[in-house]
Length: 634
Image (cartoon, rainbow, N blue to C red; front, side, top):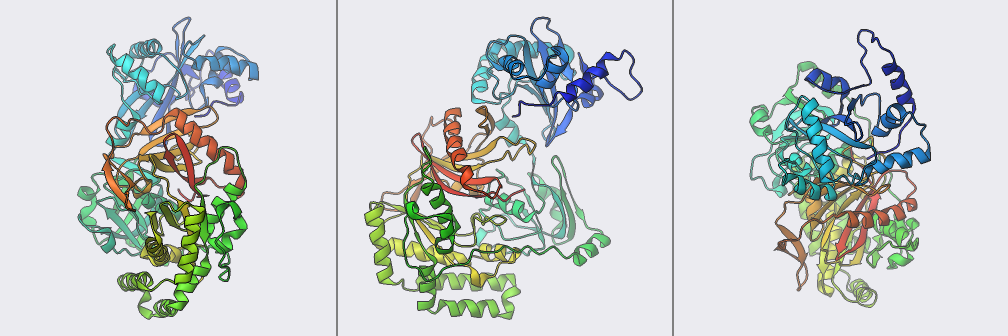
């Protein structure tokens, strides 16, 4: 994604190729053919899960150069410093960049990739390259003459290049997509690391609601789960995206987390045993732990994580609209609402947030006290059996049901519903959590609490409010807070009520490249048709792209394969419907650019310096921002 660099590498390389005699162990900065594996390894490097090499074809002479990517960071370093011997000036870079246009004045600039996990090869071009079919065919013909791997397929990296791929296919050149490579991979690393713990193989068919984990388990999941309580490591046989809740959890906890489609066959015999687990980019290790490793794990005292919660104001019943809310109001309405309020009140051109208002901590506390539920919380937390995961799960389920069954204060509900009718037009609304224990730097709490979509009518809104309040006490939320040293008695359930958007598509954007951490420009965007809940559940592979807003480069990682989507039901709530045939691509370059422009506009609102995790919905061709928080991941 980067197209800037230093001239220093080129200067060093020029001195290397000017010497007619090479000392033992040295190599030239470039070669004109790669006849074998050893030469390939000399001139390539491993980047994440791939071996990457680069080549340049001189259009005038037809000479090809395979340059040492360990010496030259990008093509421009080699072209300007070695081939053209020109200084790194703005005019020279502009002239060089013309080689990414459809009609290229001097060079074809390409990539060679060995996809290690699937042991496949391809050649490709930067996703912003407007290369045409004839130049793709020319590059393939030249590679066939001088590269040891024969029959290389073309790998299109952008929507425009995918159209070119169909053209070259008609002329006999095979192509392979990133989507095909991603979905065929038997292994995917999500969070690298090491751990020692007891292997817990979750049997097929285990319902999410009945699964109980110990914090010291290394769990082997055979199905996609929408969430998980804190564990020591995760290995899954079904995996989708780095932005699923389970993978975000693992990143926040800093635990090893990977997917291996054959994990059950390989490691099932270790179920119940203490194991050593290590995850790397292209491989993993899972074996019985040695006595020394087990002893070290027992003696290790993990550095305690303590997240400081914003102090809660429990005395203010005001229902503030987002247009009247600022970041400081986190003490009244929770972080989710306050963050959106800060974006809205910044009045940024082109940034769209659905209208909404906050139902503050006052109303949660009122409900708990009026129904004597606060005393039940105290008794539960003080019970000696609290440390037993199974007991804790049952006790929390009982408490949630009591919160849901308790009568809501009717004058308060009247006031809240009046605001829905007068300020939000009486339309179906999203009733969303906005506690003081989520969306914080170091603790984003993604998916811990519940959201109720398309809520219609006074009674339904009352039930949804109680549902959000009850979700303060889900097992996943409680165990997550315990892992971060958060005092449960200081957690309060705020609510954000927003106009519901019956989304064409929805998803998540993170303001960093999760596939290449050396890229400091690009955004990772996930999307699915319909409402956004399916994106983070991890049940199906979403559409995934990397978008570089500095040059509108769009790199395709995968396309969604979900045949159904969620839409509003006319009577309230949601329903599952088939994705209409011919819907095609969600994240076109134009849409990705429009979304990225909105996000870039409000990044300055946040001063913590971390990447942002943004939830968005698409209505027709218009984007809405529905959440923004610090990204906490691997």
